[in-house]
Structure formats: structure tokens, C-alpha cells
Length: 121
Image (cartoon, rainbow, N blue to C red; front, side, top):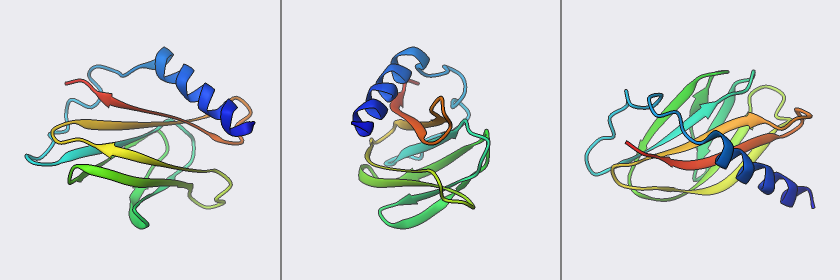
């Protein structure tokens, strides 16, 4: 039941928040690849893993850009330090596009609220 509530919250957040039209325009996607953007809207650092390997760390209220070949990747987000919060999901990286993973906290602060969407250029 908790998973269903988290999914519903993610869908509502995706519809209400959408994408900031200018925020990611400074990143150029390399030819033949796509980019994954981790947009951390929390007050903690997040460790980022793709297909089981470390892909970096994103600071609080910061973004991390990861360029990768097009495909489906297993994304895992793990709160740096305590590890109290985590998120795992498959994400699609499309050639020439930005896949944005917007990470926030749900109202009680116990779990991540995550919205995944494609950024229109």
C-alpha cells in the first residue's frame, strides 16, 4: 500500500511541477548519447548508482549530469551518510534527450518523492 501511495504522489508531483524550461538548457547532450539529470531538491547529499556501479554524488539542492549511451538503466539513489532514504527504478536514456530525475522529500520527510520526465529542449 505504501508503494501505491508513493507512486500516486510521484504522478501528482510530475503533473503539478513539470519542468523548469530554462534550468537544464546549459547542458549539451553529446552526439549519439543521452543524459540523465539528477535534480536534488533535498537538504542531503545523494549517492547515485547506475546498473550497480557508482555514477557520482549530487549535493543538496544541486544537479548531477550523467551522459550515457541510449538504453534502459537501473537507477539507485541512496542518501549519503545515514542511508535512511533510498529509491530504485529503471530509467530510459534516449539519444539526444535529457531524462530528469527530480528528487524531493514526501511531506513527513521519511522517504524520497521522485518524478521522472523528459526535458523538452
